[in-house]
Length: 322
Image (cartoon, rainbow, N blue to C red; front, side, top):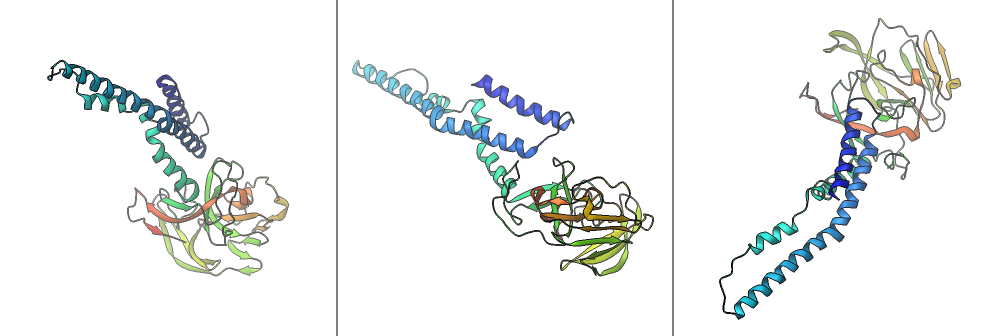
């Protein structure tokens, strides 16, 4: 069993190393599921086979030592040399390394699996598409149950939950490449007509209020951007516009239901199909979002982002956001 366990652990380590080095496209949810299953099998084997086996061996040694002492006592010998029974029993009951690194880790891995799959999942913001709401390097928590619980890996919904609302900040699987997680703001829900023309957002013919704020200074880019306050779905958030970027949307990809959208030099108008959402970044002129690659299907939803718990580059970044 030690050789088999070493091979299994080497396979996990090799996969993680290949993922880190970019040789394979990793899937952490699948890796965590496999780790839970494998360590769970070892935990069951330990509880119902290996541990009882070690206990029987320890009990057999104790019986043998007691019988030997009784035989010697019958001969009048009371001082008997030999191994310490307590230490011998402890050595026999001790888990071997290959169980310590599998069955011993199962409770921790199971807790992480349940927490990450059904309650909260941590994410790190990799880009500036959600500035000023979220900054590069923000470590955030994502609620996995608000929009309905989903089975890990396959992402199949098992409870309905509450549908995403306009203004929510949502994590989802990037439609052109579902192995990647993206984060944007929900702008349009199924049935909405979303228009982004001349850098003004209109939902179902209603122009959204947009109030100017003091310019935002981006420390990473070392530049100022025009900052506004917008109210969407009853939620107020900040957004940025870059006067140097045109309203025209270049480099639009082909995507399902693209015929629901009309592109012009002023921007885009899209009718959101059933079961889909239109997403945009708060850094409006520096965000690769639904304007470029289309709608997000319900099956791609991961969860609702709601809390910043750390940013190692800015320790003041902590708290909830909208």
